[in-house]
Length: 409
Image (cartoon, rainbow, N blue to C red; front, top):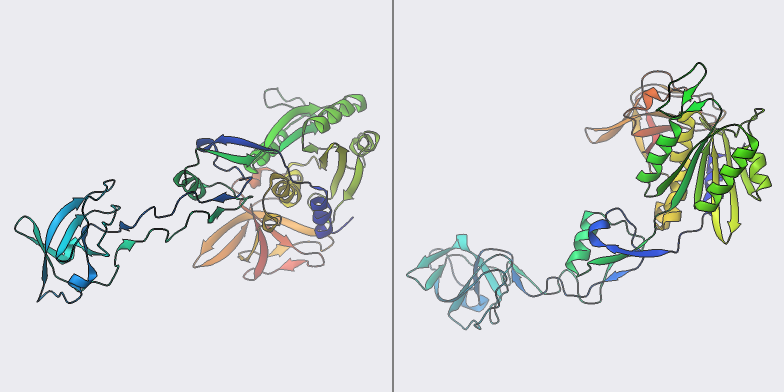
């Protein structure tokens, strides 16, 4: 067995980030990863504009204005948003202006309408001493033409989508999504559509891993159940390796008479890098690489459903981040310190992962262990899990009320 940290580094060293890109419509880009740097084509704001409804004035005209001694100005123009001002403001003049509208030439300050009084039809009293350039959003204050806006490797969430739209991008170049083949091994497995017979199990791993891959930004290629038949398993594994960037198989990686995965990987030309890891659950983990023009990484995960998911959460997720084109700062476990609400126990021989729920209470994160058996076969109490607590090697107990390192799922 090798330590968890060593296994993680081996896996990351195996992964070669995708270089293929595609151009997609901005409306379809949410969650995708930007492949090229975006620089501004425009100044932001595009022009000096008003942050308030009010009056555009010359500061020099109103610098001595007060509520007791207001300055009266002539209103020479009304400027709604989207309108090009037609007049240059002269001394003694003002323009009625609305939020977002262009500040007219000659004006340098906005006075909020709440601090004014309209008199007659075309005059306004300024009843406050404003600050110079108050409520004027200056052209280029946020970004100027040529400024970098978004770096390659940025995940496109709503704020980034808004920036792309605002700078005039209707299409955006992104990295293609990783393709991940998924297959389940075992004579005992059946699909959810089949009626269970004695000794059989429904293959939940295919669905769980497909959901994991989708959530991680990949495209799952579900290859179904492969029985413990060496020839059929060889054919299925060969097809999976040829069709994907990563392969996730479950089962067949232990030391049983029907555990063929490692032998077949070697026969297919795989370079096996990992055979077992000092982690609980999930010790039997086979990782191999194939170099067939492009690099393919094969993950042979345990068949027990919790072990398979823990392996994905701990190892495959960081590998997917690197493969997909995310920056190096995101190729790591997303972990924080939390207070455990219960005693956590482990045998100390392996790095132990205990699943449960994380909640923010009075400004501190608290981790609550899932109820029921923490067996690697018990997927029932995984429901609602949003974090896993990590008990280090050689630690057998973490007392309730103390801190524990927790990975956010």
